[in-house]
Image (cartoon, rainbow, N blue to C red; front, side, top):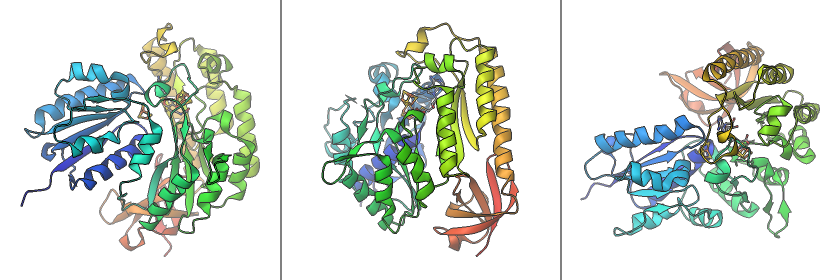
Length: 438
Ligand code: SAH
Ligand code: SF4
Ligand code: F3S
């Protein structure tokens, strides 16, 4: 008997790429193939790439060189994701051994490619979100996790001046509510109890309900909450301008909604926010946070920040640090500005690297301290933790608190899949350790 062919998928970048990678996995499995963790053994190697910063893009090319050299003799290499979309032709020039280039809204064509041995597909970068989701739902999902991502919205129409996403993911598209509910139902039948709803602007969601009426994110979340098997819901990533009052209020009324929110602000300086085309001010951001805390006083907030954006001076940076102190975040991501080809800010005069480095260091020290302070509040307290899998070390299980903190718990693999009360015994910057009270 012939040995089943195998595939290897490496996902870079954001959670939306993780979702897409899982969907590609479902397609490979439907063709009778097996997943492998080693690209050296794989017949098909997929790199699902990210273009957000220069480093991410360069990683694609260095990984490509490596898998080409060290992979099996007759393997096929597929480049998917945002670098595929932005640099399809360039990939074919820089790495002519690549067999297929698939943009994020063309990944369903993987099925066509695998079905036809003589396929002449080469660089597929159409934007067709409708076809993507209609095609993908035909494939059976495979998951043994209790927690799952569900993309509900693709693309972005906001055009922040630093960002490639509107060019790599296309314009905004919201899936229909019946489609999403069907997907979440199927996942819940596989044992999923927590869903993270995904979109580059997830809170701008506006999809049709069963009767074709357009509905927002709060309506969708309430509909998903009606599914008994789903115990926790969260959503990412949100834009401050789309935090509508009904969505803010939902944080106080919907008990399945997790007590955390990722709400990137990027900068605390009104001058820089304007140059970034964020279309909101720091004062507006504070207003949104105040309203959120009025409805859910213990909501844990996280954000993304960019330091060293063109024209950011010391005062602008201080404004951002002031915003960080004023809000208090449980966790955040901060990056040096990376000029991206084709985006408006890339042509402006850049801030010297040394200044960017110094500012990033100051910011990350403060953000880490805020995370430690946040985690410290839970020492010796009880937290409900969804235990999702075995932990990093032998004899450990791990999971997430309702505030999205990672929690490691010694012992008891039998509790995987449950939400259990955990007594927190130790903390570090990025995780907690605790004892399950079961
Ligand atoms: N849709 C989300 C963010 C998507 S990209 C939002 O609107 O907030 C994820 C993060 O990468 C951004 O929040 C931003 O902080 C960072 N980022 C995007 N482009 C960048 C660039 N050119 N240089 C550095 N960081 C960048
Ligand atoms: Fe990029 Fe701005 Fe769109 Fe977020 S809102 S994806 S940062 S353009
Ligand atoms: Fe990267 Fe594309 Fe996500 S650029 S952050 S993988 S949308």
